[in-house]
Length: 223
Image 1: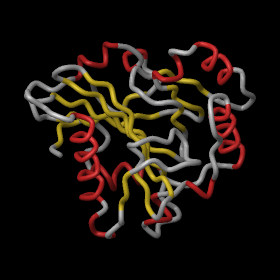
Image 2: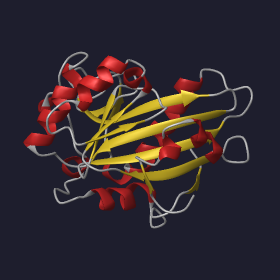
Image 3: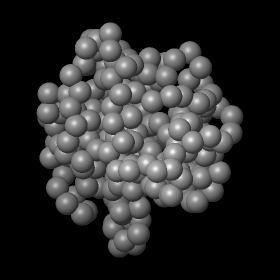
């Protein structure tokens, strides 16, 4: 595995992704993901073929990617930063979702520490792919996580909003969510560039800020 991976890479769409698990328990491998405008369908959607078909048929939806990781519809394109965390879990590892969620909150909080961003955890109604793993600021969703667990390994896909998408992109994301539930409201979303007072922040800049100068290639990190 070298460099930033495309989220449309077939190896990221099936069980082969577990080949990336680090060697030692407690290690976490971080791999930045690049994606084109469109959506990533989590396993809660593509396991229901009628929903996958309905989303693929939407006008202007862009590239439709599949992920073995849980979740519904995750956005893609230049307005979003996607990160894949591959963890080798120690044994025992009680309450894995809570521990992994806490690990990501600590990771994000540490990187945003200089700005004292007040991160919150909990479902944000009206946001994209809302769920218990939503990370928000002032009640507006900034990031979301999807999980896939094995006994000794975990995959965590994080999507972080960098800057507001176009009205066309937001309309497509809203339409995708309305195929199975509530739509997406712009006022329920927050953006890293705005939170940090960097309105010109792009995806590559957000990657450097959150991961560091070695962000161009995957590496092992500690939560």
